Length: 232
Image (cartoon, rainbow, N blue to C red; front, top):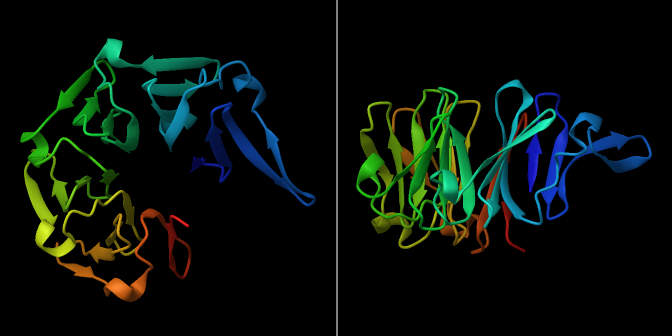
């Protein structure tokens, strides 16, 4: 699992913990930040997603061990005991107020406010299914939610608007979401479909032959292009 911090350093998470990749002229080497050395262990939990928050804090969503919030010299834990769903945490998105949206494997949509966790299930936040497959908070503050066969966006008042429905993508999931520099939100599905929605709400699905029919894991943008990572 990869994440980039504010200093453009790439961090990698695996069952051994979390490390940052320091690139040197001789190649890449692994090194843990000294002040984090005693706190980077994930206790054997497998990380699924990482997200940098405010002041350099790092959120790590795991399978079976809840969330870890890593700060210098301290690690916070949000687990079933503190209200989190017992399903793996696969998707994270900031809520814009210091909290966090958390999506997992059919455990509903969880919202950590900074003090406690609320687990939301259909029809809260416009959910049709408890299976939240993708999350993104765009620059306008809208929360985008990818479900099985559906992509919607939710405003700050909790009003949901369906952007893409089952009639267009069938039972495909939309786990990969990205907002590009023009404000378009790109989405990729488990069957290799790729599309984007404009800030005005119109959306376009690219031809099915654009990509191989494999799951889209990630979408990133550089100065000229949108890049898509798929299984295989």
